[in-house]
Image (cartoon, one colour):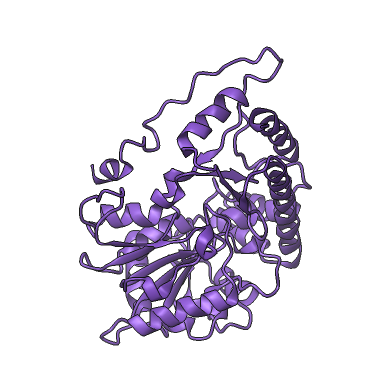
Length: 400
C-alpha cells in the first residue's frame, strides 16, 4: 500500500498494460525493440565450459556434490578476493557468495533494526527504498511522493550526480551505486573519498552497489569502494556476475563484509551477516559457481572484457543518436546506461510515445524515484543490430 501511495498515481511494475501495438505498415515494425541480453559478440566459451562442466559432473559419482559451504565455494571466494580485490586487503573469508546483488541487498537490510534511518540517491535503483518500506523503516508519503524517514540525496545534472554532503541529513545506512543505475553517472575517487569521510564522521554504514564496476575503463576511477582509504571501516559492498558475465538468469553474486566494520557497540558486522546467511541461505548453485570460477581465470576475464567493450560500443551509439537529436544526455561512458533529459516532458508520456511511434522500449525515469521525472533511461544491453535499429527508429520518431 505504501509503495502505491508513493507512486502518486504512477503505475508500479505489473500495473500498467503495454500500449496496444500500432503497426506501421512496414514488415517487422510491429514488434518492440526491447532491452535484452542478447549479443552477437564471440561466445564466452571458457565461462560456458565452467557451467557445462559443473553440470555434467553432477551425473558422476566423483563429481556429485550436495550442500556446499553456505558462504560459497572456497576456491571461488579466494578468486574473488584475489582477482577482483587485489591490493585492497580483502580476504576470502570476508567474501559471501550468493544468488545475486539484489537478493543480498535485502539480506543486508536484515542486519539493521526497525528504527534505522536510510539514505538513498535520488534517482536510484528501487530496491533500496522498496526493501526499506517492506521492513517497516519508513513513514508515510509526503507531497513530493517521497517516504518520510528516508533521506533522499538529490543526484542530478546540477550537482554532477553526487550529493552535497554539507546539506545532507545524517542517516544510519547510506545506499550508494556507482556506476549508477539509472543515471550512468560514475563517482570519481575524490567523490568516493567524500562519501567515506561523511560516513565515518556520522557513524554511518555505506552499502555500496558495485554491480556495474566492470564497465569502468578509466584507470583513475575506483571499481570498488575499498580502493578508498578507510572504507573497510564503514562500508559493505554488493556485486554480481549478472553484468560481468550476463548471469542475470543464472544468478550469482557476492557481498564483501570487512571484519574491520563494527557496530557502535564494537561487535563485528561480519559475525551478524554470517549468521544471516547461514539462517536464510543454503548457498549458491554449485553449477553456477563452476561458471563463476571460470569467469575469474585469465580466459574468462578476457571474455568479460570483450563483452563489456561490446556493450560500451552500444552505449556510444545511443549517446550519439540522442546528442544529434539535440538532447542533453549523461552516462554511457564507463557505464551501460544513457540518461536523457526530456526537456520538461513527462517520462511516462515519452515512454508511451516511443512505444507507439517507434516500437522501442525505454525506461521512464520516474520509476527510479521523484528525481527521475523528466528523464528517460536507455540501455546498451542489446545486440548490436537491435541497438542500431533502435537508434534509427528513435531518430525518426524524435526528429524535430
